[in-house]
Length: 153
Image 1 (tube, helix red, strand yellow):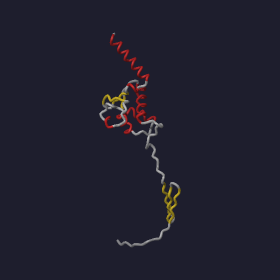
Image 2 (image 1 turned 30 degrees about the vertical axis):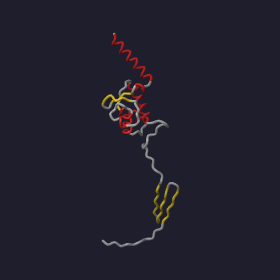
Image 3 (image 1 turned 180 degrees about the vertical axis):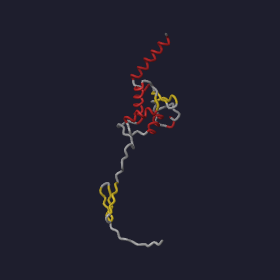
Image 4 (image 1 turned 90 degrees about the vertical axis):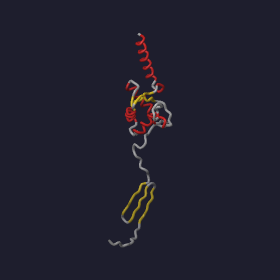
């Protein structure tokens, strides 16, 4: 195969208009946009001043209230949080759950030093007493009193 070198004079126009560039060569036109595309679901949108740790505490309280007892898994918390925050990423949420659990073996890798939850076994957590809603504490106190009366009888 033989190659033959040649040159063709081409004229064109480049237009810059705000966030877009238009290049016109002969009758061909190409548009380039300089605005970054925002991807839906890329970042969770929380209230100003609210963190993902606040969401975990809120959701843990809600799960305990709905279930009526203080035992849940991280995926349960995640499913509950998805109702309010559909763009929430699962891995980010689960790692923050671990970061809120001082007795979890991986807690040492996080700097948050939150103590909302306790790890009670493979995949199971409880909400620590100081973070329970006041009415939950009252109900637990009544259950303990009933149980102690039964033991003394």
